[in-house]
Image (cartoon, rainbow, N blue to C red; front, side):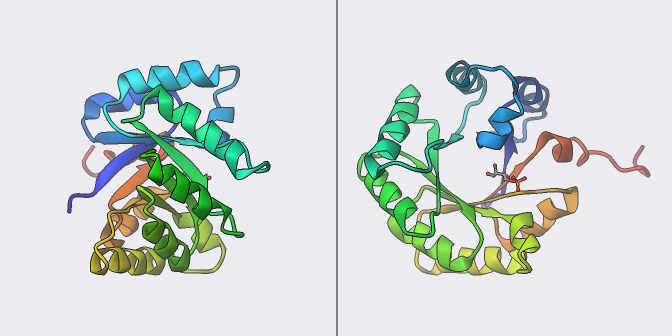
Length: 207
Ligand code: E4P
């Protein structure tokens, strides 16, 4: 299967610059990424990105407390902006709440991206509940002392052998070499921040 590249950004400037390269097939965001876009209206920016990108756009739930219904309500609202393209990022909460939310969203045909994945156990559960995507955080796994390549390889093998439809996104990319490691380990998609992606075409000797 061909590895895909998503851009990990909420910046229209970055998207406009990279899109003509012809290598981007989707965009991922999170609260941290949106906070970096100082002063923008969230909804307006989402519509702007949707008009530019012909592919999935992951939007993370902002509510972390409250009832399941509160989170479902937020997910429904974002999804209604473009049910085909908008993917709801649901964290894999340690108490199983994330799984409950994805389970309900799945029954409403709302696309999901189970996020902040640190282990093969978590990816297995995300695939089992029917998440559209499962996001493994490459460098955060590494920071925790575990080899992210192993987590990606194991997750891919389980997904393949059980014939799950969930696609693995690898995020938390901090340098160009991480992209190769993630792709070689079996990521379906690598989501890359702009500042890393722009380094990838360059090689001193090529210049
Ligand atoms: C991926 O979907 C996330 O948005 C992102 O890659 C998280 O990475 P970080 O570890 O840089 O926050």
